[in-house]
Amino acid sequence: MKSALYRCVLVAGTAIAAAWAVRRASLRWGADAGELTMPLPGDGWLPAPDLQATRAITIKAPRSHVWGWVAQLGQNRGGFYTYDWLENLAGCDIHSSDVVMPELRVRAVGDEVRLAPSVGLRVVDLEETHHLVLRGAVAGDGTTAPAPYDFTWAFVLTEDAPGVTRLIVRERYAYLAGWARLLAEPVEMVSFLMSQRMLRGIRERAERRTATGA
Image (spheres, rainbow, N blue to C red):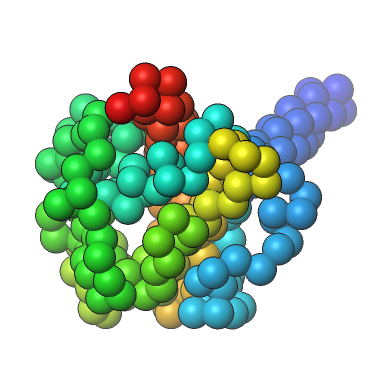
């Protein structure tokens, strides 16, 4: 009996430790220690978030070749460069573009960037070739009010070496309801799955553009 109980405790402890490790890795995918703590554009909108994820990727292309893909993100624009088939199973109607289309770019603060046909975020900060910050309080049923949490999504481009861009993406959640964590935590895990693919999708497109000179 004691042996069986010990095995159960060991298995449970191992599962908890593994889940914690996966969770920790998902919130910092690709980001180095400095990027995890450095202030980024958009932080000021939610200065004390309940949940934060910072992810990053190195792209062998100049910022000008990366920015076009970032600036046209959105269901109503160039898509998200992730798993369109999976997102469309949920009725998101997303079609990721393989070309930069200037007419689809965000132009100014206040522009809408949709996550799905009925779910949109607003541009709250924008600096050409440097950063794009989106914000929105989104409810679980796709409406915008009342919402269980406020949310910011920042895309920041740095170019520490000529022709090499670092794309840093930060998500911040501020809970507006006591049960918000129950929604935000699962949403964030799905976001990790999509975000890492989005970052790789942007890298593939930007590096291909640089290589071909298109």
